[in-house]
Length: 63
Image (cartoon, rainbow, N blue to C red; front, side, top):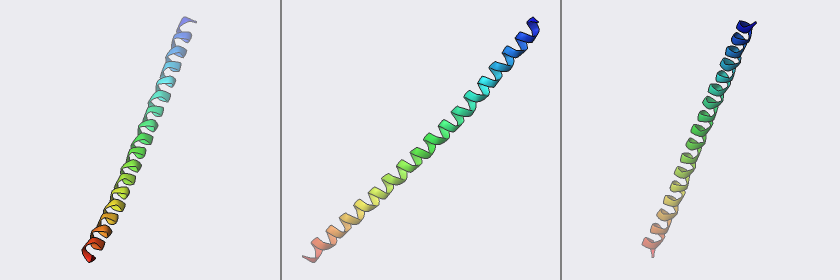
């Protein structure tokens, strides 16, 4: 009887560890994707800013 409880406890612990490892993998993947999205957005914003500055410079040169 004691061995059955012992093995079932080990099985429960292993199951919980699998869940924790799986969740942490998906959380890291999610944050990595979020970071990439933020970097892409920052790059787009910088490109827009550069385009605006270029237009201002060309307009100033025309005057």
